[in-house]
Amino acid sequence: MKKTIFILEDDEAQRYVLEKSLSDQSCRVILTASTQEAMDYLQNTEEKIDLFIADILLPGLNGLEFRKFLLSSDNFSHIPFIFLTGHLRYAQKASELSPHLVLTKPIHGDDVKKIITNLFLEMEA
Image 1 (tube, helix red, strand yellow):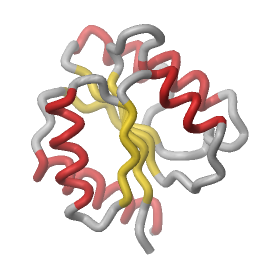
Image 2: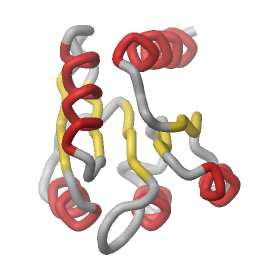
Image 3: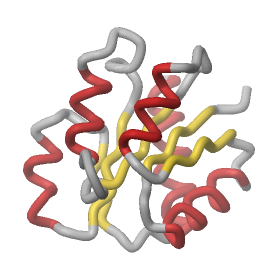
């Protein structure tokens, strides 16, 4: 069954890399560029999401605030979550919000494929 991956990333080049590499894996990819756009989408959908991937530094509300929003929701708190960051100083704050992974940017397509494949295999075991 096709997995649905929800991506919150404001950098267009990184969104493209993520979308391309995950679409090649037969995943359905939902892309958002701001926390507000992501929250609006999620509040108006009944779609099953299998994984969230979010940048930490975003305009407006950041990825940490997005993770807190998800953790406060019965619909989304149990879904695996990966933080992306180009700034290691935010990794500690991110890890306090119990993500499955914190990945550093730039992200490379082949690495993303391996990481996501392993995460889904781990979840199914």
